[in-house]
Amino acid sequence: MFSLPIVDHEVFERYAGLSLPRHVSYPMPTWWHDVDPHEATSIREESLQQVPQRDLSIYLHIPFCEALCKFCACNKTIMRKTAKNADENVSSYVKALLQEMSWRASTLGAGRCVRQIHWGGGTPTYLSCQLIQEIHNTLASLFDIHCDAEISIEVDPRVTSSEQLQLLRHLGFNRISLGVQDFDERVQKHIHRVQPYELVKQCVETCRESGFESLNFDLIYGLPYQTVETVADMVDKSISLSPDRVAFYHYAQIPDKIATQRGIHHQQMPDSKNKLAMFLLAVERFQSAGYEFIGLDHFAKADETLAQAARQGTINRNFQGMTTGVDLDLIGIGASSISQFVRFGYLQNHREPQTYVDRIQQTLEPAIRGIRLNEDDCLRQTVINHLYCYAEICPKRIEALFDIVFDEYFATELEQLEQLQNDGLVNITSDNRIQLTFPLGRVLMRNVAAIFDAYINRDAYRFGEKHAFSTNA
Ligand SMILES: C[S@@+](CC[C@H](N)C(=O)[O-])C[C@H]1O[C@@H](n2cnc3c(N)ncnc32)[C@H](O)[C@@H]1O
Ligand code: SF4
Image (cartoon, rainbow, N blue to C red; front, top):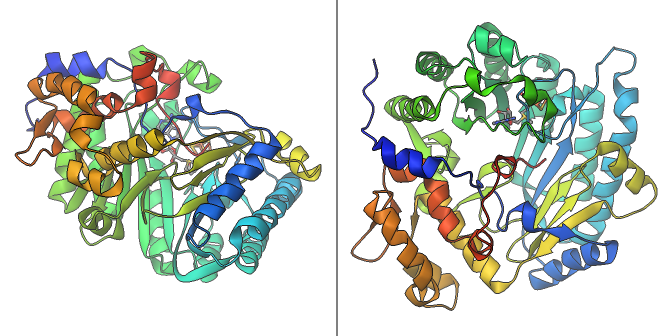
């Protein structure tokens, strides 16, 4: 039995039933439009003119995986590997990646310091040591990487060798994220992701011996055949391996978009009441073990940089999840990757790896979608971001950043919030801060954020499940 906070289930079901975005961008990609090469270039150039010296974050997308996990909603390409074909299969993609890197360095890199680098996928450790080294060295030769830069990579423990881990550390990677998902054998079998606890433990030990400063686990709840008991076990096993950060994702089931999820049926999945219990027990257990609960679905040890940044008000949220460092332009390189220019706009490369390669080979612009932000977008983006990062909106803080009177600008939204206040999702403090309650407000954070999303409200648009999950993919 678990002793969990009391939740009004009638209220919870009323709000949880709506399918809403997680706001990893604002506006959500659904509202972006097709951009021609001229517009893509001008978005980059004008953002650069706005703040030429802004520091950078770089995201590299490596889409390859050796085998398919049935639940996966990331942008990946499955390529079985033999010792012979491994590098050959990916060489044209790697060449295109290096080419795009050099284009971006020449237009956006000059005099700008890179504070963060993140390799995501797919599975970046699909690549051989030789290719990993070539990509990293090229990046380091093209950009000015800060000596304290956070350099991170997503790895699948099943396919990552100790040789690769040692090389990554040697190259300067200091953060590593392990896709764990779940430890339960029955769940693992069903999602085609068999990965015993011992294998993860071994990978964690090698990461620690290699000297990575920070280790993250990706866990998922809501998967088929999970129960509150199996999730409790998954959380306890995770805590026993002491990751510095944990991303505790809600399983996004979007079968109309991800064909492999069609084999996962609703009857096999936990219902919303059980998922709520899973989530609350994770919060309780991670907090008891010394982790801080951050944002929608992250945990970090109190002395970890993410928890420190949350306390100092310097946390951010983007397509890679929660990050430290607020004012960085993000340059996305690779198929489907997204670039984010602070208070300016977004651009996204073609999703399909072969088309991306073809475009680069033909010296064509790889970005095909994007948006320029107007002033209202920038303001709402900040408000929504504060809510996800700090679980509150402080009108004074917003007024210090934008030339508005909060109560006047958001008069309609504040009126709508009254219902959520009556239902116990938010508290308004004596100095007018809008704070999410725990547990109800925190678990229904997306419903509160949706009030401030002009695109949802303007067209009374209800997001379908297909929009509810987004990665940099
Ligand atoms: C690119 S993968 C991580 C690296 C590596 N490919 C692996 O699986 O270990 C990114 C993460 O997205 C999460 N993810 C993928 N599909 C998801 C889904 N349908 N719902 C929730 N999270 C999902 C998983 O936790 C996964 O670890
Ligand atoms: S979860 Fe990771 S390894 Fe599995 S298919 Fe998705 S990206 Fe590939």
